[in-house]
Length: 375
Image (cartoon, rainbow, N blue to C red; front, side, top):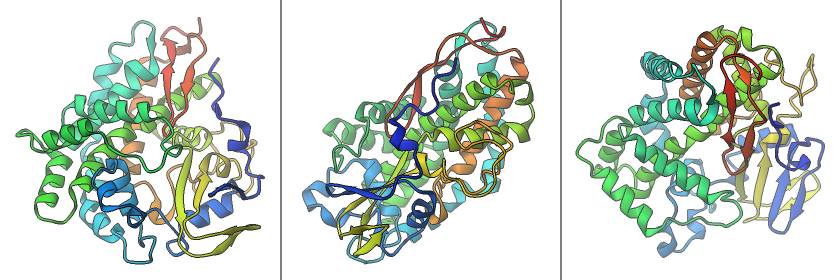
């Protein structure tokens, strides 16, 4: 059977838990508060670079250098980098940009699915390779460079446990060499040009490439979870329909939340429920729990897999101006992967229990399946 799509502690999925403090960290579980804070550009921020010394900023992990720069205000209230970065990056994420890559996504999945005539691992042999190939081609870098970022992310585990995260000298050397590469293309080449023009910093440039690369794990996990849950709920025969597959992927993201939590820092005093939030406090918003408290009527309980559910307001991809910029690319490659596999393997079955690991991005260490049905 498919492993529990909720492998974290039960509290991580409980939307009824009131906001509470654990030291300098405030945990938030309920949907309305989480969604409100994701959209709040005044009271909380992810841009805390001002809290670091200049020396620490020069060795900050690239994912933090990028993510922290995507808020509208800094911790002190100054203008953030959000508007500049969104403007510079916008052309990569338009509907037309995603449409131009759709044939590439289908081609990648078609090549990989041809090898599924024997038992295989959905995550390791299909979903992750498909997404990595798609990302590498889009970024204009080698697949090994995408996997470099993924390996670093997995090795780091939960980056919220040690704050802030710093890059190693080896990582700095890797990204300096990568960005000097003569064959750089796609997004990475555009990023290099932005850095050369002084539009972004060096670590922001690295952070863009790194962050897009590691998003492969979350996208591949979403594909794998959608496949497994559809099989387990006897819905696999419907997954060759692109509309149904897209709905199932959205439900998998809501239910499994490959990215479990979002972090912000308090800019000014205010109340979160009954908790007094102080400047500098960290707020951990549990997207896993919020998505189990989605408002509105639901035919099935929110801890059940139901692709026909209204998922238009879930926060698995973020919300508001913090909605994942690459969400349309992720949805496109995921739909291509699921529908291609469903058409090639209409009798796909789960071979044995699937095993998940838990980190800042969830993935699968084993997702064994058979094209011949349940063994």
